[in-house]
Length: 116
Length: 116
Image 1: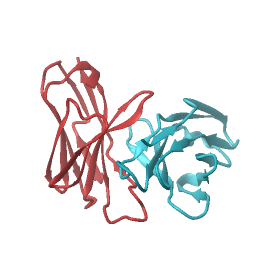
Image 2: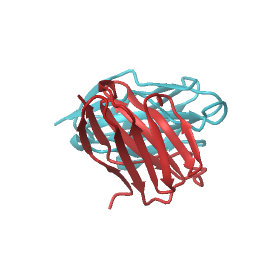
Image 3: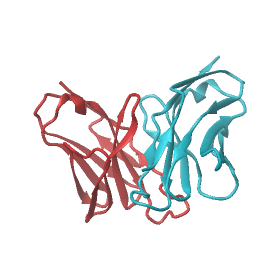
């Protein structure tokens, strides 16, 4: 079965500092990896994805994520945090083979707070 | 208008009542999903549908049923609501033709259900 772990329930970072939100995964076959963001009282919004190719993926709002196959990780990063980045972030994965591989599995979410 | 519209946005009901949450989309996507979000548990898949004639159970389908009335409409029913079904429910869609996107989901704003 596929799974996603987001080891930190909350991440606090000062405005202007770099931020990292961690994600590790387990999946059959090759992974399709995603980050979504949820602002208060809103649905989830797609940020970025890794399917294949370069390990560093760039997405919306200046976010990027680095795929590391050996560590089975897909950490979300941003060089300089903004207060408006404060939100709940979800990592998600699906595999390209095996039962249920077309279903996305989400992590439990990490609350990011950017402190002015 | 939103691409994925959920109604109602908020609902308070009593144990044993039948509840229907509705979802409609203007994305033209074939695939539709119902997820449930609980604090600390992330999103869990309840049901999904790849087209009008294709309905599949997700991770936590017990106590729920769905109906795909048309390509654009997918409703979730709780036949006899119970308090532990209190949660935030999300409808989502994805494009079957989006091979490169590989399941990028578009979410509705959510329906908050409270069962007393």
